[in-house]
Image (cartoon, rainbow, N blue to C red):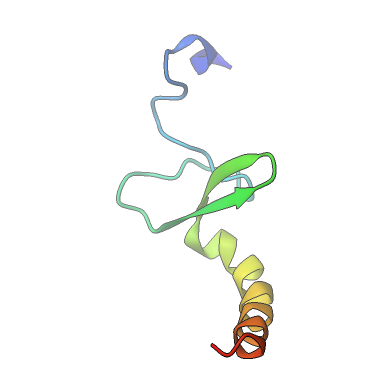
Length: 66
């Protein structure tokens, strides 16, 4: 890529791994942490993951008295 030589990476900002578009400043985004590192996703691109995880997290919190 043309921006590989730019110190600090791509000057347009981070790229969403799902839709492969840049995540612009001021745009709603979600920072997701994985075993290999953190990635900045568009909020709507991350929604399917949160829709699956939220019920599981709620069930766990009820199991621990939350």
